[in-house]
Length: 154
Image 1 (tube, rainbow, N blue to C red):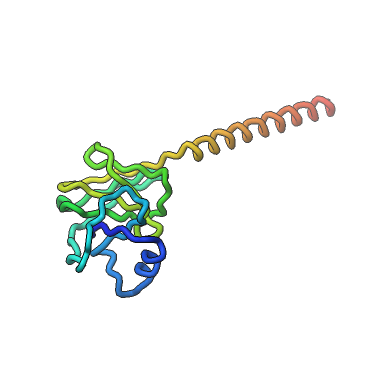
Image 2 (cartoon, rainbow, N blue to C red):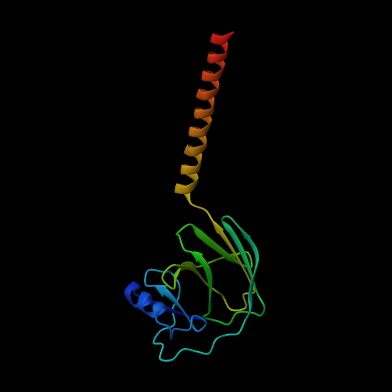
């Protein structure tokens, strides 16, 4: 689909409209760093390029396109967008943004045939580290209590 930038209220109303064809336009919020098509008067026909997911794991998605992407097109991944998502196309960084109100959108350079997405978030990593430390401390405290209780019995 082509890239169109619009405010959230317009995007939500559009994606909820049954007549909206998601194959023809990718609606990015106005704060996205993508280059939208200016002055859209009519939506183009759907591209007809098949996309297949070749890897899907926590924090990692790989998508392959059956044909090269034309200029000005986007890939919409049916996964909730969060600012920690990063994309590469052919090993080079690609622009991501929130598209169709809540999904991951990737601006595709002309000729793109593969997109790799990874999720990295400093806040998530910090929370994960704190959680692991808390679990380790809880296990140590429980272990010390268990050993002390066994010594009392013996």
